[in-house]
Length: 440
Ligand code: 9WN
Image 1: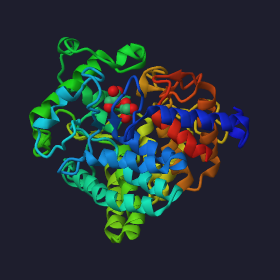
Image 2 (image 1 turned 30 degrees about the horizontal axis):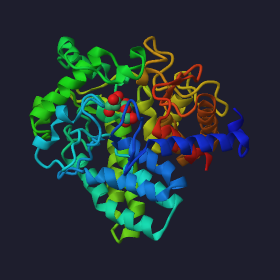
Image 3 (image 1 turned 135 degrees about the horizontal axis):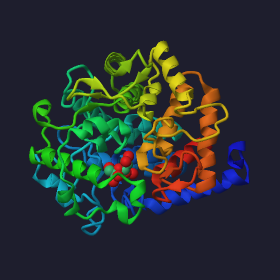
């Protein structure tokens, strides 16, 4: 699309569309991912959105992050949803009454979920600051710093269920890639009753076709896992013995590693010592390679802690370790090979967008959410990884592909991986934000 050619009418049009989308989704102190599908505040959405806001409304970038971190729990966890009390019951399922955070120890005053999402916040806070440095931005960074450190500490201590130096996710929602084929194996072991699920009313399928969303069986399991965790007070002790879903995810842990690298950059600005962050970053990279890299296939894959095995599915999660600047050369080469293979098709000149799943797999589903469609946040992370490892040529191909998607379909939530057609929410926060970052 013309937007890829640099400044011009199309660039101007995309810029205005993205700014209008972010403005339309702004809600008193945060940005909703989507007015229809996700009308509350989501954790990693806010992180990506802050990057885009830094280009146009820097004060809002800090309000976005600070409102999220105000809902941080006493143990350091940053909840994946902060509920807006102004919305009616039923605005989203599962809503605050289901999560019942008010009955859990250490929960904040606001109603929240009890799960987390990939910790991309330190990275995006750093990028937002670099984009628009000011005294106010530095003061916001100084307020956020101890909270970002606490977020990392929670993951490194309470969530290292495997004991090998990586954090585990306790629910597919925590991965951010809810129904990725990566979770099929671990999810199959979760007992769930679809009939019980049907007693609830799903909210998502009122706003998007059911064929583009997770299935009822997925939802039955999502709800069952939350119910168990909630009934245990969202406590993390003894998870290995009692929790049905425990997985070490390469994207989640790459985000945690990138967070330590970012904190090492932030620390001197706020009068803190970067040394411990550098050490922890190195530890995470080493653990990722040791625990999640499979030399036989040359891929990073999630480890199911219940079986001890790496999951077989080759998903876009496996490309995420590229965001680690200290990823060793053999693993960089392997991930680039995987990215450029027929499975994912990254190239200088891309003929189709980057899919969320191996497009050669027999169960590749081009319409169903994280089982095939292309997503802007993942594209953005992979692009950053390619830039970090000297592959500006491939990063540029990805950038043009991303801009082409939005030029053709608008700020959709996800895109058909063959046709580029827009799917899910048509006015999606992080798509708008990350397009601004590409255009700036
Ligand atoms: C559950 C908000 C969120 C994203 C996730 C995406 C989707 C929620 C849902 O929407 O998840 O958290 O209801 O499907 O999978 O990555 O943060 O945009």
